[in-house]
Image (cartoon, rainbow, N blue to C red):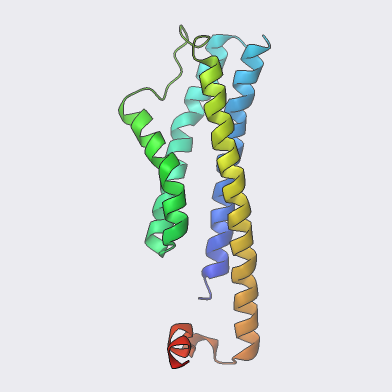
Length: 157
């Protein structure tokens, strides 16, 4: 229970990293569309961070599963499944020769993932604040905080 606020801070940092990686990819596609970037540079930049994003999101989902945050895990599962499906079918890398054909679709995917990560970040920040407030209230009310079991006190009512 004492580690709960720290865990949510770690989740918030991972969520910020996912937002940053996804925004970086979206900016690359926007720069290509505006002719500020050539297809070779875009594919090099996006392909360098796409696997990192997939791994980070996978670790993010697994950490929710291991720590027992089932609802948040289930919310993070659809993008993780999408990432895994793209990776296993080897469609995750941007091909230089076909980048203009898939430009609009890839931008839409990045926008949707960016929106999901921002909403998820809001949820995580809310849970971080709630965990910190919950921890602070119980440490102030109960002097021997480690011996207090919240679940057993609920069963008494």
